[in-house]
Image: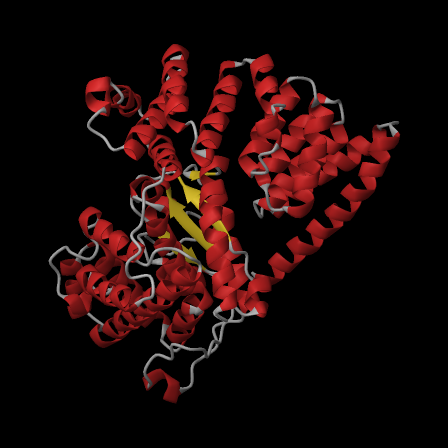
Length: 521
């Protein structure tokens, strides 16, 4: 991966290498602060507590630049169903981190704390500068329970709360540019091929590269240690850490490609498993074993379908739910397979098969509130894909759906209401939501559609501009706000003039933000 911050792909970010990405961004952005580290500090052992030269606001600006590119990436996906599930794990971890004092209020307010899903089958997650996190659907699809997923998120959260990215950047600022380049090449090689890393080190700055790799290993151990305590504080089974490391050992060659341990940027997976097993035995929840719930099995199946939508892959799901095959699976695996088969059939537009497997899914999830809810959302999704407006509207206004306060229910319900000619209801619900969640680009997009369906052109264009704002594309946002301004000037509708005052304010804000960005360059 070359140091080019204009092309940042989800699939190019191996797990735990976000520290490297931060370094690449720093090198590619000469206007960003690179305060030199005192000579005494350069020879000292890594300080794993504090001592950062990069301010939270400066780190957030770096993260915003990276996130802006990821939003444009074809692999970026905002799936409300999966994101609801992930947020149900993420928010308790955030609360536990605050409670333990790992997340100070100043950092809490300065950073984004946002998870971006990547449509990639690799088992991968990473932390980015400024409180952004990447999570591959491949990882969501492979974990066996919510505790394993919590262990990954807790680990990446700890990278950020402990300011690992900032500390790594500050450490590199003390080195000459050519030496930093050599170290980055060494770390890149180590992440993919230990033998190539050895050749790079022997060919040049061995001591400097080795120092950085050791520093990264210290950070990984610290993220494991703090992540373990945060996960336990949040109420998740600590055994999830062990299970997750075992999966990483099986699915990735990153830590077990035969290279020497001292050439690796992460501790050996076997070492991490042993460390976590020791911590589990000493914890108060040593006897608590993670359980694969029906809800988790369904979400994992959804992640696998969305990460691999090739026709052949989708057809395999139909074979898996044949009675002879389904009977060999556990109850949770059966429900997951039926969910995956229904969604796959829906994507293949085989609506007859989708309806048949949905009925079987509903039968097996009856009595389980969380699983029944996911089956209901899938039913509404199916009606929308089929173009069954009446059916979708009926599901959206059902008492069960109205009682569902999730984001997925809101967004699917808004689509159904808009198609059914109830744009006012959709707009009202969405407007309430975006007032509390202004960074929700998909909600703004649906609000734009609802306004457009009601003939509110200025409001629709303004909502489209807010989509760009939510995805940090201020140039595109300003263009849309100016279009809305022109439309408002030509309109005779009172509502458009009210909307125009909001648009004027937002346009000025975008101009100010673009000026700030220009100064940073």
